[in-house]
Length: 307
Ligand code: CP
Image 1 (cartoon, rainbow, N blue to C red):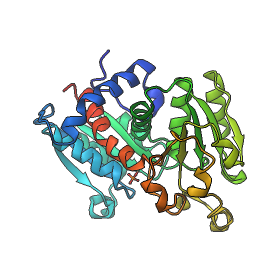
Image 2 (spheres, rainbow, N blue to C red; image 1 turned 135 degrees about the horizontal axis):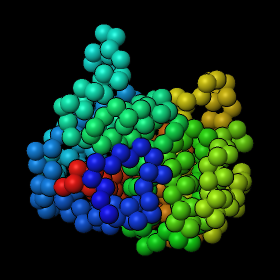
Image 3 (spheres, rainbow, N blue to C red; image 1 turned 90 degrees about the horizontal axis):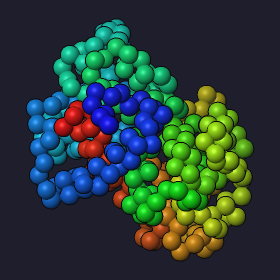
Image 4 (spheres, helix red, strand yellow; image 1 turned 120 degrees about the vertical axis):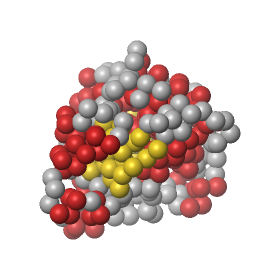
């Protein structure tokens, strides 16, 4: 199967076979991602990196992936330095990126922008996060991390903790984990529960998620604890945010109730939902997870560019 020229706007754009193809290829990319092996698969190719929202990991790991494979990067991390500031519309901005590059990576606060960009651009468009919507490449690196750490996805008990309402990474991940037959437990404050349509998608795939507020009980036999921060910037009402801030924390006390081989993941950035003392434990894989963004994005770029 070929992914050449394919837009990746949602994890739903990929079949199970295509997801596995990307993840298997990512394994081969690890030495290249670490700079231990040279592979100029994307020499002469240009990535347009259009970030309308802050990012550290997604933007830098896409850029690293492109550079490590011999390609180059154009773009912006701050739209206020572009002609959007002069009143140009976003569609014309996309048209220009399409004219200057071979692949477009876009992050935007408004849900649906990446899909719209894909409609106007000839080049493949990769969604690097659209509002509270989707973040498919984060989902792929999350799946990759579970596979690397646990060896399988099927049957894994995964607890998704935190802001399940506005956290786009958990929306993509819940669907993908259900596709691969994982067991799902959703733990969140009442007001930040997983949207109904995502729960329904999981049920349609044959996985009935359990929703609870009892974190201590939920992690007892869990294989993976996936923590998210509360997405302050997406709350329409700041008083709603002040009601939920600090309502959960992963610390040594909590981890006493976990299995020895529980892995703790987080898409990052974290604020205070994981205590720094957890970083030193064998449970913590979130920095490794962030590194995995490089081989996974190398795999994605080389597949959509036919490298
Ligand atoms: N995980 C993630 O999307 O991080 P950034 O916002 O730093 O890109």
